[in-house]
Image 1: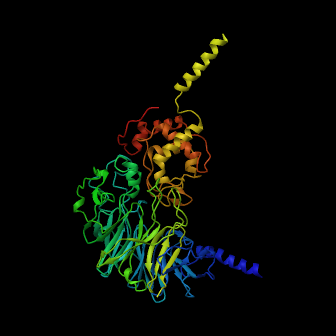
Image 2: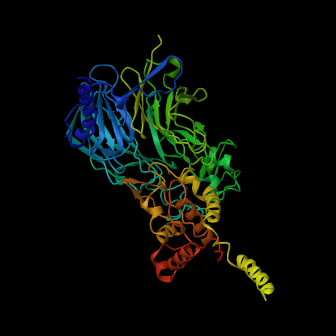
Length: 433
Length: 160
């Protein structure tokens, strides 16, 4: 009898993948028990906080959003079972997803909900669907293409999205380049950057579109901000009604300019930066970078920089917070809930995906950071909030097991974190009263 | 008679080992030299374990790109790749591979490829100086030059 039950459970787990592979948009597949697939994965948190694992093995889980009824919607970079968006429903209230449904036949990063619509992006387009937030039901037949024809050359092609409260959607268009060296010479040692950078009219910035108009492209958009190499984490701060973004800084300062940056300086530079973006902002890429050792915005070596020249950089928009190099900030969320203690209110959580360009120094990042804010400005130092995603040590050459990518806030004020290495989702709650 | 032959042979041998470019030498020596090139030039993107970086830089472990045709592999190192050209079991990699023809000699390329093909669980034959030299010559013939993107004048090549 026991072996039979075991084999039924086993078969159930096994068929989840198979079923979702051929499931239509409305097929629901139950995960009865917390199986091995969603056993809790421990992470470390400040005192008073606890986490549970909502699900695992979802694939390359990028950004995520929570509907008013508590259902999670996760955007996958690569299709799993032929689907690019997964809805996670918890039917018994234990916090773990037990009904998982897929739809959408495109990979991508961005996903958000606003005014009765679920918005999701591929690497070149943005779509929306009607959603009933009371039940979490998405009308997949209502799919509309809102934005189309955005540049996708592979490198930095994630299109992250956020809406304001005035019917606009903001889309990041990353520059397919390290520091705007000529096409075919990207990342090559000793090759200067192009001036002016020909990528800036179509990439390396934020574009604003109407949230309800179909088939918009560059010609219909407001070129809202420029000089941003690649943004993956972005959020609209409702307290001060402004856009904030996290920029991924350029790579290879040690490899390409060993006369200016030793191995350690190359790992720590440039800063990963948090910007407040007003319309028309120019944040300086590819001409400028923020030097973490000099504490200054300086001219990039591809444009003649020597770690002291500022060139045009003084007049560019300066960042509010700087982080160590190459940590790859992929998620940004301003916390508006009331479940967490007072100090977290209106502050910024940032999910760092973790580095690769710190090698041969040990890699770093792979954590969620908190920055306290007051009136739209940082009011204290950043601190690590959630850690332990590495799943072991991180000596030189080691690899992280989980890579934080997306952040979302639940209706009860819980914080959700996604990992795009294994597809694990955590729900973090404050449990001390 | 014997007296003169032996020293002459020794002399010849010594002379030969100097004249014969260090380039040939044993596979073990090539691996040793290639490791240095790997650490200085390749590790930053392909990582210490050659496992690459998800979605960005491809792994160099047990793939047909590394274990297959040596001249095709030498071409990748000499001329680089655009992002997205490598596909391993459905995974693609967005970062471009910078061309190394201006910064690495034929010998360094032969050594590093021999190292990679013999390390990280890989086991394949040596890449020789002749393999790389022939590939570089073929790729830089006028016909190939016009087909390829214009090559900016980089550091002059050390002739082997």
